[in-house]
Length: 256
Image: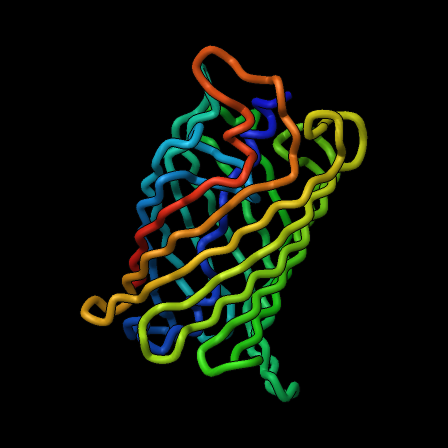
């Protein structure tokens, strides 16, 4: 069952990039943006996807002035012996700024397909809806809320809901900032359990630094974890407890 926990897949490419003013101009109302990252541990909703080892990740978004976009995001993964080593997730969606609201949030809806090319039995699709608010309490801050649903969680034909909220805020013009997030995942039925439970909570809290000399380059040091209890489930080569308990994750990323 623990291997199934690790098989829960990746983060989608940041669809908010559809609205990036710095995206290169393309014909037919198209825009292109992307990102690359190196992280010490690929965590998906609090759970490692690389057995606590580093991951190299990257993605791009091709957007249209209408709000439609297509994204593709990839990362190496490691769920144990005989499992896939690559995750490649396409997404398609629609994003629009809600001008009629005073806060002018961005609404983003779409579908994401968690894809493992060498292990198609683990593939699954998820619907998502996001609302992003900017400038709520300070200049440059951002609040992202999202709701996700699938009827095939981790490829086991189980209904699942995930809700998440994340907040980031810069510390003036210093380049430093803070980020915090909390999420809740629930799975219906008896096909999937988190060590006996049908739900769990995950969290993240950390500091960020934006490199002024390299636009779009950011470093983040965060504590990431969950309340999944796997005490006593250690194996010879890997500690499942380390896979879900709070640990430090350092990430270097660059948007373009």
